[in-house]
Length: 540
Image 1 (cartoon, helix red, strand yellow):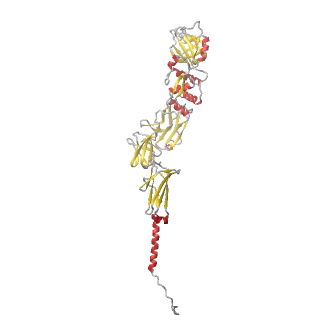
Image 2 (image 1 turned 90 degrees about the vertical axis):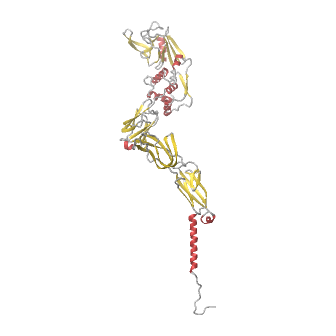
Image 3 (image 1 turned 45 degrees about the vertical axis):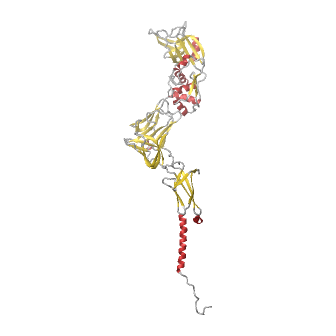
């Protein structure tokens, strides 16, 4: 029924509590949704003991898988233990690793926030280093090597013999493993039990001293290889002690000084290195406290080392290869490389091999003199011949210059050619005679005269040291008078003033000279070309 004219229509009443309930319900729903988002995830973070830590929240669900990869994308096997991700293989300190984790959410929340949660973190495995690499240790104290973070394993020692120690709990330092007053060790560390040892770093300790101290490697006075590096480590930075100056070596040695680090200089020889059989001295720009072999210090400007001579065995091997000996030599294994460094090493430490006689019908007297690896007249004569051929004084001493030439020949493949090997044998049995043997054959046997009873020709074997086509021979007769004979032909001196030479006599085959071995002119002319410096002469 329509309302009477002049009357307002009736309205329904709305209760306030209905609106309040609706708003509250909306807030609850929003809160639940927010809680689902807040408590249904996972997180990856670094861990103080493991590679990483995975935390899964209340509504996060279950871990589907955890994977790790190195910087090249190669997989790293890992295990998940109580939320900690631990490698199943040892990793290197400072290695870059990426860890991925996928968590499956329960269906009750997955429809709202997603079925899975993917988390990833890239990190570096921890690395520990010595806090100080140059330590000053007071007398009577062992000293300790401290690290910039605790370690669970450490290896200390010489570069080729590091001794590894693992700890049940983290350690912040270790004792210097030597009671020596000074020295250098290599130190490698692993901050975690699941890590490999890191790259070794050297730590040097010095005794307390009023002056800057230097530790030499090898120790002063030690014997070292010609091509081995020489190392000087200073207690203070190199620049503070030496400025831009550098030590000088004598005798002069090819190579250069380089700065290894702020406290260390190293000299690396090049070529043939330091001359063999010498004492090499490094002269410093200023006086320092030099640590000796026993740990004591002495102020000086020089540090010295001994360079060993080449071995006699290697000398014989090289002379045989060059054709200066009546023997051949054959290496048991691979030939020594034709490089200075390889040849120098072989000179000090000879390769294995064997000698064999080069010629048939070698005289027994010559064979009896040979001894591999020992000094003998055969080696001395061959060395004198080598020296003479290379423009050196033929003294039969294998000095630095001789070794340099020998090694140069070994590298170039040079050697003696077209000369062969000669040996002269003189018999004082009547009738006296001289026999020249060359390359396996007797070239000539001729009557000869040796010294009279008052001036006999000394028995023994001697190398020729001078070779003259003509000369004047002078001296003192047994009665004290003086003689001076010019124009003597075909002279080959051996054993001081004795010589094989031509001389005009009415007869030959008996003692008639003053110690020399006299030959008829025609025989001397034939023998002379076969008797260069170094040729052995045996008198019996």
